[in-house]
Image (cartoon, rainbow, N blue to C red; front, side):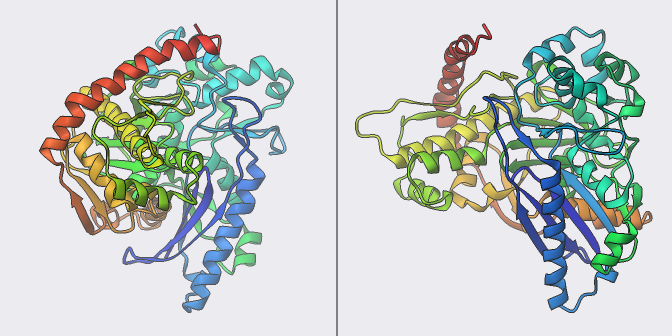
Length: 495
């Protein structure tokens, strides 16, 4: 059996996978998040560790009721939110709260990075405030005393690895999101580290996601009744989620409807399109890459509108939206509540409702939100298509995939079939467990371990609805962003 741990933004999740690939138990523990200033987003690494212990112990209690001994667990895999900067001193003490993937403070530093020689050629990406290297440049400028004390920079899941094993390590998929990795070569770039004021000593070794990085320390193994099992390198949350969904071969693609919205397409070779803010990253498996478009707010927009509209929860918002139906030429919503990545790379972008009338109801706001997120996702998918990697069938995962109404709307907007699969809500934790299995059983078949879960439903696009979205709503959506972008940039002094 294999334990997968996923360090998300809102919770740490744990799943137990048996040798046949079935999830036997799962657990989660929520996480707080801090926004001490506008566009800042931080968490305390100690909160991650406490939440991880809680989730693991909940899971162990659950399997005890099934008569499953913790000693049957043969390996642990890790996944987690990408890009976060955990800075440690020489004694592995955390120097400050971790700066997260959705933090937008370092836009000025990104402009500096774009002037570095061969920056895009080496990294395959634009410099974006969410990425790790920009955060370290910000620390060097604004918190120099902290920067001088930094002995190690770890990504979020790799901080959990340190607490579990005492070892420093990361994997290629997570490292690709730092802007220090030569993505084509899958190794740290000395030039990019030097330009940030760091060296190879400041970053952990890069391994493939199915490699063993260390072993559970003796104290934790004794406490949890486990053996000193190997801990796999694992993957960034999106790459691990893809492994969990069986998205591991060239041409496979998935759409993840979580806090952020991610379109992920697998390639058997290195591709890049930084000019449209497409992420070009390594996959969590050897000799495999992926292109990814990222919206900073997807399902989180539903939480926002539910709160704004006085809904008790998102489920009621979805019910209300479906019962009312989408009004033709109703209000529109720009989903840029925390800025945006693909395709705009605009930290100043803001959310907006437009087209409100005296008879507009909260159900109109609900439908506008669902549509606005869908149109934002379509922008990202088309940017990946333009890089030369088009998928005609897309697997949908994440909490948003539970809504039949929304996933059908998304199929109509995108114009391609969307496939829902069993266990899609488990996501990255399942992928982490599968990477642990591949690490422990190196001879195992990739297609057997990482098979696609059973199809639950396929949302086929309605041709007439797709034409309506493509011809009427998408042009208006894009026009609204263009017209408002300059306004928001001027308001924040970015003009």
